[in-house]
Length: 429
Ligand code: CMC
Image (tube, rainbow, N blue to C red; front, side, top):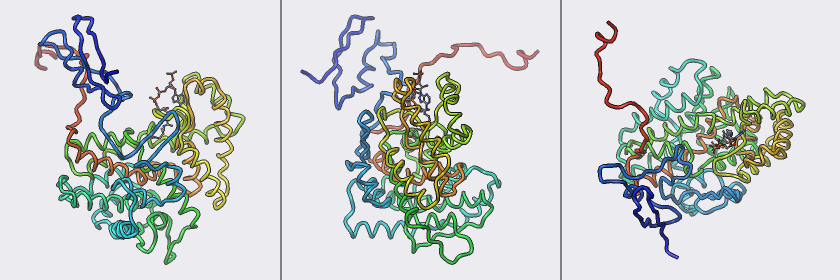
């Protein structure tokens, strides 16, 4: 057996040997297949990159059929059970778990970069009272590039490190302030005595008390949610970060693109859409009619289906369990009963079985976030904070990858050609 593909071009009768490496062929090798020298070579048409590898990566492994998710080789279930979000962030960025000294230094560094320049505050205050927090987050992450102009020196490893630290550290500050802005409440400065996640909750909810310390069970649950969202190989927002980063722009601009991609309802915005959907369904009796509407193509069952997971989403299983811990503190969200019934009915329905549609990470996460008293607009901000180490780990990998080039997909041109331009003065005469 040889690791190659023999392709016969029936247009010319010619045969080509295309090497297979790591289960892939190089698209460039197909480019050598052409009918004559003046014609462009064969290309691959793959909208949405459904079957195209865009990079080599050692950050995250997913087996969608078996429901496996691993960060740097460690199963998500074990990390969610025994690690912390900052340790997972270290793992993603550095590729290995930290020693005690490395962990302490990392936590210290992140903790002491949580503050942002006061002008960032003024900038955020300029948004309208009803601005969506994801819009504020996207703009303020992008704006950070103007505060750290040295961030453009992306080939300097020390420089990359400090920008990575800054971004992981400041994301909760920006996210919390976007929330306070929408509420018309004063922005709360970071409390460096608290853990990463406890400090985030303090910046969100502190009022006149001198110290805000959230229930440790809630801190733990949110930390787990951040871990579950920390990376997910080449998803839409990570691809956006890599695509924009491939122009060698600074990481703040690249991550701002990731935040923009995450904002969409088919990606991070799905958890917000799930809540709206559950509220609209309103009661268990309305579920069958809703399911019929989905099957008739009127709408999607939000929080179901995944490009990669075709059996179950391991993150959804962990979140479902975390729901119980959170509801023990906050009381049960009445929408949980509708969600569970909806899941049960959908999983028994031929339409969903045939298409391998299962609950994804967003199906239950919104219910937990709501129990924390987050309005739906904030859900995707929480996703963005969790995903930041993943975006940055992928960005660090990208900028050191000698095989990477500026992203520039091909197109199949379908428009007109060689039209003669008639000036407006003649066309409109
Ligand atoms: N409800 C009803 N039908 C669906 C759904 C759904 N949620 N998802 C997919 N389908 C159908 C789809 O209509 C298609 O049917 P047919 O073959 O008859 O045309 C079939 O299943 C295959 O779907 P697809 O759209 O080709 O699959 P995709 O891989 O392009 O899309 C997806 C994946 C996640 C965008 C999609 O499943 C979806 O829109 N789900 C709802 C939104 C959602 O929950 N997104 C969160 C994803 S997980 C978090 C994240 O990573 O961001």
